Image (cartoon, rainbow, N blue to C red; front, side, top):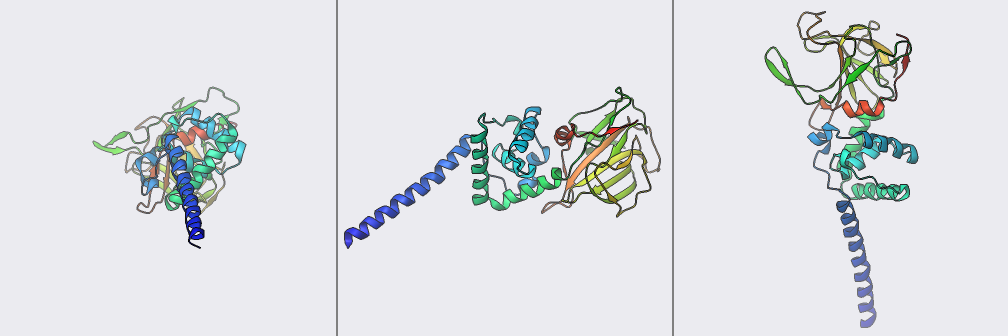
Length: 295
């Protein structure tokens, strides 16, 4: 009887040892692959808000989503998490089968150890990106020279009335600097939440998408129609035209800066009603999704 008990204890010990060993091994594999634990309130960290990617990372995300049909918010939550929100440095595994297995292992690891933080990230990325269908400026089908350009200016300093403030969006500039020339379409379905003149933003429209993202289009020359709060918008609907309105309390003021669209993307988190997220790499991701437009 004593031998039987000792045998059971030994068997239990071996099983327990291997269970612990597997946990440690998985943790080691994740850490050796560049992983780290998610920080508390990961969806409010500066690293999350910066959305650090690269052209290669964008190509990889597109290919990974196409090959495996996994929602983009889950892909971003896992890859951003294990790369400490620096996806531009993420080393992609060459074998697509091992790649998917690794993704699933990492996802399982987060769900078992940091489910609350992981779900916060998934929800945040869903609000930021999953509702987007189109790039906000259509391509001209008649004038190939109708060009736009933009760079990563999120978080940079802006000066208005000798007071510095942080730039919370991405500026898409008109190559011809002509107000009213470039049409602007809604990137998402949604509901008009804010409309009208703002001192800094000029003529602006704010649209809340189904998963909670707030898309802010500012400095418009004019609106496409008389929008009002509560109006429903479909992705691709014409909402207005690019301009240079704003930086004045006097409605209709133009000419204080070059013609451009200021695009802001905001989400609500546990501690912030309105938190900005860098639109630059999101725009890069969706640049191929430009409508054709006759202008």
